[in-house]
Each structure stands twice: as C-alpha cells, then as structure tokens.
Image (cartoon, rainbow, N blue to C red; front, side, top):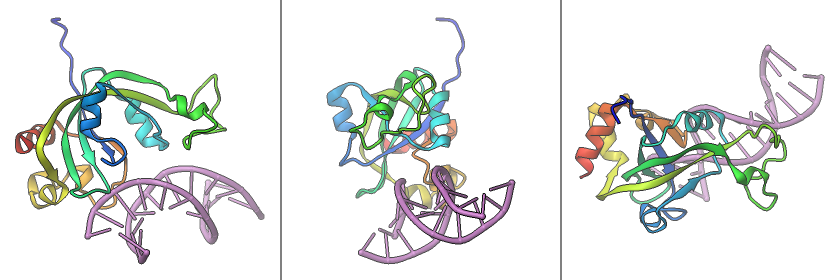
Length: 156
DNA sequence: GCCAACGTTGGC
DNA sequence: GCCAACGTTGGC
C-alpha cells in the first residue's frame, strides 16, 4: 500500500461501568451505537478505518484517557434506532434514510493507568484541547495529532 | 446529588 | 424563526 492516507484522531467517551477497554479487548470489536447528538454523529461519519481513538472514561474514578482504540468499520446505520425495546429507539428516524450511525472499534492498547483529566488540565500543552475546555460534553470529538501523540507518550 | 452548559422540542 | 421549557451530559 503506497497510497498516502492521512490518519485522523478522535476521542470517544464511555463510562467504564458501561463498557471498558478491558471489555473491548475481550470482545475484540465493539459497535459504538447510541450516539444521539448531531455533531457527534457527523464526526462518526467522518471516521475512516484505521483512525485512532482515545478511549475516555467519563463519570468514573478516575476520569480520563484509558488507552487507544481504532476504527475497524466505518459509519453504518445504527440498528438501535429501529429497535423499539432499545432506549436509543428513535421513532422519527426514517428507515430509508436513517438518522443515526454507528462505527465499530477495536482495542489497540491500554495505558498502565488512566491519564486523568486533571493532568490534562494542568498541562498547558492541552489547553486548547476540546475535552479540557469547560462544558465540552460531546461524546465523540476530533483530536489534534500533536495532542494525540503527546497523550499516548504520557499514557505509556 | 448538584448544577452549569448545552442541545432539543414545540408553541406561537 | 424565536425562545422558554425541558432533558441530558458529565465534572465536581
């Protein structure tokens, strides 16, 4: 493969009690569904196979980046939007033009310990990173390459 | 459990 | 198309 391709970097939030990196390593593959925010959905649509993802633990102790995952399947219609029993069921999503998408991710690595939000906030290198900014609640967000690389370096 | 910051909904 | 009410996210 000589084709040059530009990797993109992302950050995705999940609660470890809901689904942790250990779960991901066990299952090999995880369908990231249930995203019901248009901005986050648009980022899901931009993801390409091979893109790298910072796996972020929210509403947990500690809060922060737990490791790295990668995109293994690009955006496809999220099946939960058509499932009446799912809490993500969306009766307004048209079958012929589904409103919501999911991607599949796989585990890449898990940091020895979580790189905490506190540490990121205390390092001026990350001051313009979205997740550090106050009130940035988006569950899927883009990450600059320099931030991604630095976090991996610090995390490992 | 609190609450600030958003995003969404729906009446007008 | 405005905007108040409401719901959700997520750090603290």
